[in-house]
Image (tube, rainbow, N blue to C red; front, top):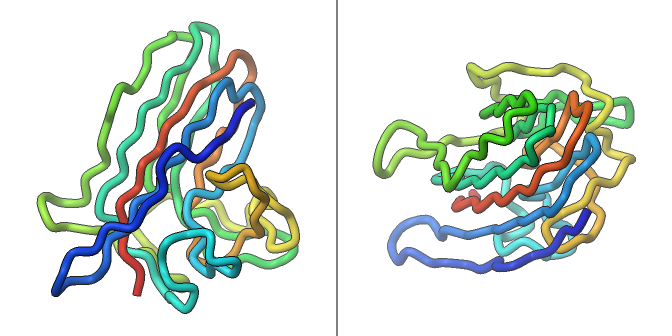
Length: 182
């Protein structure tokens, strides 16, 4: 599997909250895997938002999922809450199911209610989504790979992708997230 940052940048909208863009492209993912898309705490300053942010405002999530014709598995995007050394609650924002079809999701976009709408991900706030409670894949003492290929610890409010229930095949994935932080 190859992971690499292709474009991470900051876009500022004057008079409004700063918007940030993060891009992750993962090639040939052929195992169950968790990926850090946005680390809310940003301890090393590697994400473009300030490290003292308490919540993320997802404005747009663009995806391109390209499975091979035998990929069988699920791809999730979601955010974490109540993370400790035994696991964390994974709030699924969206799920894509693949069953050996080879059908890709070309340049799809998750919308959150129309132009100007956003999904606010706040630790401690329960959303009307599927929640996997105390999920051992997301522990605060276990590293997962981020867009730059570095390892990051899971924490409350992080936005992650998860490839689960994979039985065969591989998938190429691209995620581009536009978000704010406050």
